Image (tube, rainbow, N blue to C red; front, side, top):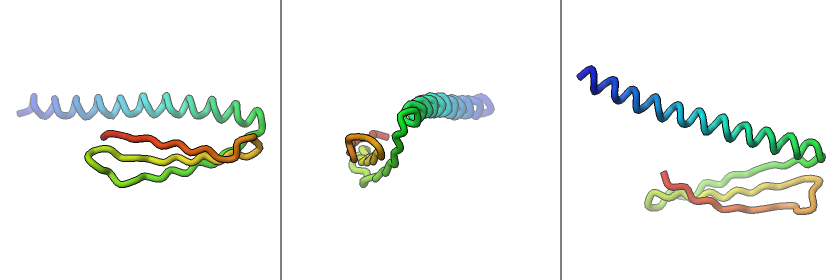
Length: 82
């Protein structure tokens, strides 16, 4: 019983560590992009819209509005399976 409990804890801890690594990587990439945009005086505002989850797939619409840039608005659509 104790061995099974430790195996569940190990699995949960490994998933937490994976999340932390991915979060730090994404945060580092965002900081690099922000640094470049700030260098050129470009600001932005993002808006995420989460659609209904259908058959395990959730669609997310991402709208990004840039200021002081030639393109005013860009829209991307992503599908996540979780």
